[in-house]
Amino acid sequence: MSRKTELIKDNYVLLSIHDVSPLYEDDVLHTYDRLIDLGVNSFTLLVTPMYSMKKTNILDHHPIFSEYLTSLNLEVSLHGYSHSSKSGQLDEFARITQERAESRIRSGISMIRGALRQNPYGFIPPMWHAPSRVIRAARKLGLHYCVNENELHCFSDSVVLKSAEYIVSQGNRGVSFENAMLEMELGGPLQIAIHPCDHKHDHLFSLLEDMKERLGYKFSGYRDYLLFSR
Image (cartoon, rainbow, N blue to C red; front, side):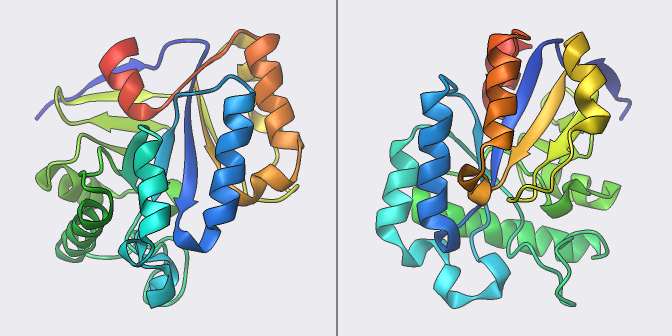
């Protein structure tokens, strides 16, 4: 099937909180509060339902946290099954077969449905790397989109939306915005990934505030952008 390519609109940031897991419950709460305090109320929760393959991190074993996530009325999308590969690397989907990718995505969908009483809307793989076989698996299993680096693959109309840059924080002070600074000043479309521990530092949230107040950026979750802003 042929695909059209379009740019995400200028002055838009597709914003997501990664690694939403019981492991980071308190950090997710603090991160949510900081975004709301900035006046940002549309973003995606990227849930990993069995982080690091540990039973203590299984989402549906934590009903209070699950109820909290549901109460936010935000987009929930899938961010891997465990976030880690068999060898322990964080790029869970980089080297597995399509059959194995389908199995993990299917299990992740089932676990989110069981805990949150909803299906995840889309899929962003750990490390933002989705080979074509993983994109096919996400489409086959009924998800609405899959992200691969700067590309947002929309399955409803076979369009690939592209951002100018994507920024993935590391949950610490080490993330660099240097490569994206020119695009920010020009109003280029971006994807920004927040990690739960980012709330402990001010640098990322200061950047988001500057983008909103000085540069006029709008922040949106992936679902909200696809449904209401394209």
